[in-house]
Length: 66
Length: 263
Image (cartoon, rainbow over all chains, first blue to last red; front, side, top):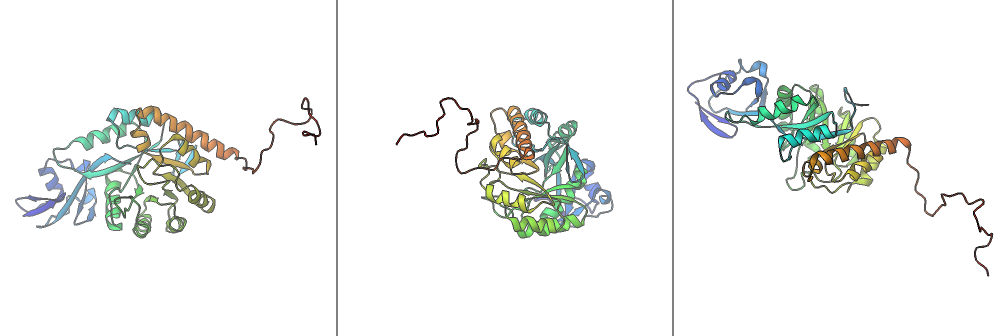
């Protein structure tokens, strides 16, 4: 299925949770924050949130800010 | 010592962490002004990019409070979602709320700002909204539960100083039930001193320090200016007068004569 991740299309083999998606992608789930279809997903729900074909994800990390 | 929302702080400077020539110079600048609060942000991260983790480790090592922002958000919904992501990532309910209306001036969208502030306040955030010097918008932000309001002195990153001086003064005189922080537009230490002399509780800076030739020294200069300005405000400034008034006592002045000019 296809996902839009940070504005770019990515393909994954099957339906999976946010937690599994991040781990598969090599990202530490504790080091990022996530929104799916513009809705915030708390870290405590990463392993209960199932991604669907066509979902749009934002995966963000700390950066410098003013 | 002073109180910002639920925290007791020493410094009246909140410092941004962007635009420095290097991470080391950023750290040195934060330490040079001894600020207790630094602003941070969020960005999209690819799996290969470890810069975010390195940056966050550096900030955590400084033992300061972080104030995440919603920079770049264009709508209330984007800002609210970003604030929630920031709370998850930085483990703080403080949020510097930015809802930007215009790319050229980076002016806030007052409608979206008040709407997002209301929603985030209901959700338990401590909202520090970046706004203009408009008194009515500031009042609305207080009315929807903001304990802190952060008006600009001039446009973000412009270094133009207190272009909005008169409106800022009116805001400070009118809004006595909220903490007011001048955020954005300060260019020189004397700008910060002026803001403090007007009675503002603190200043939020970034470009003025980060873009200096020597950022740590500039951070220190701002710290001294802010301290001087605050002390001046607390000491009670004299009221300006229209005409000269001698400061040296005139009684007993040598060569003093009743008539200074002969007819």
